[in-house]
Amino acid sequence: MPLFSLIDDFAAFVRALTDRYTVAEIVHETGISSEQLQQWRRGGNHYRPQAEWLLYGFCVNRRDFDLLGPLLPAFDRQGPLDLEAPPLGDDMAPPRVPLCKRPTTIAGRTVNFPFGIGASILTRNARAIAFYAARGFDILTYKTVRSIQRDPHPAPHWVFIRAADIAKVTPPFAERIVGEDWQYWPPDPRYAAMANSIGIPSPEPRIWQPDVAEAKQALQAGQLLVVSVTASPPPGDKSEQTLLDDFVRVAMQAKEAGADIVEANYSCPNTPGDATGDLCQDAELSGKVSAALARALADTPLWVKIGYLAEPLLTAFVRHNRAYIRGIVAINTIAMAVVSPAGTPLFPGSGRGRAGISGVAIRPWAHEVVRHLVAMREQEKAANAFAIIAVGGVNTPQDIYDYLNLGADAVETATAAYLNPYLAIETRLQLSKLKGDPLQDSPHVAK
Image 1: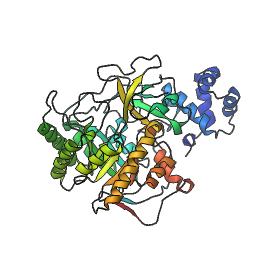
Image 2: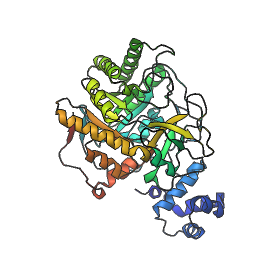
Image 3: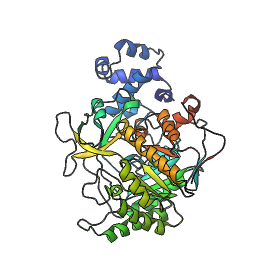
Image 4: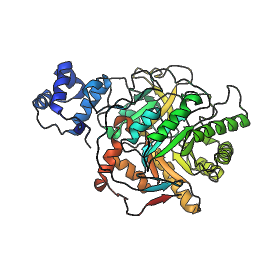
């Protein structure tokens, strides 16, 4: 689904844009020729996806959302970060089109199509969940919540990274990555990568619990609400029991609010000093947390979200956790040092020298983890084998099917859901065009 197919009168859009900005300004920033812009003003054929994408970015970077009609990003990266704010375009009806299905049973729950959106600032409240649910995402993960209130880091929060630096994202992830300024827009969404430093902000449970319940009511049959949780032990309290108790507390609050599945966040690169930021790297302790959560949650399935783990660490993690979990979400963003184009720290404040890299830059490492998880699961052939929910570098419909063909049971995205809120619709309209399309008549089951 070309993005600009959502705008009824493309010529009127270009005329409004060129009335607001000079042709020279648009040409300078986008590289689109003045002849092309004049042709579009006169109503000439506009199907040039890359050029359209650059016009879209031109408007988004300048926050000219009024020009875009239904063609809006769901999140304003330059605006104030408000956990209660609805997504941009919340009042715009999504296109009504018949969507292909691939019924998949995961952790005993059936979804219409095994694609969703991971826990992120994009899924910060019920209206955001409803927004993506109405646009074909069937696995909706409510942003990580806590048992206490926690503010976000100060701005900036989310930036594109320099295309030339994508190749630097490689173990041991010790290179410095350059984050672009607000004027930058990636020339091709297939190769976009970003860095974020938001922290894990959360309202108090008295606020997020009724909002989770509202989010649950917004879903239709064949859609799943996953609620991501993390522990918030008091500063200085490194007691193992405190950690376990608070994880159980917030997980039960999520269950009581209506979560179909609870996802324990064992990896977040943007929480300096938090005991949970690197929990997935401690196989034994994470296993104890999973055991306590599984006992408390009882019939509510438990998923765990992990970061990049090389094979030995991943094997240890699975060995200590597999008896208690129904799914592994892999992988979270990868922490790396991020600087401005001038070489200074991009994200101000103590402990923010490193930020989470996402998008195409982490795809090879997410693929690696998924392949190892699939191999471990196949080797065990266990009746209660965990589901594998793949995340990382999902920018296009083909990326989704590449993960499914690796053996993942479902796929999630965040960066691409910001770049193109219609990615799920686009994917479900183009099944026949995708390589290795695994769509089958019989339901797919991941226990």
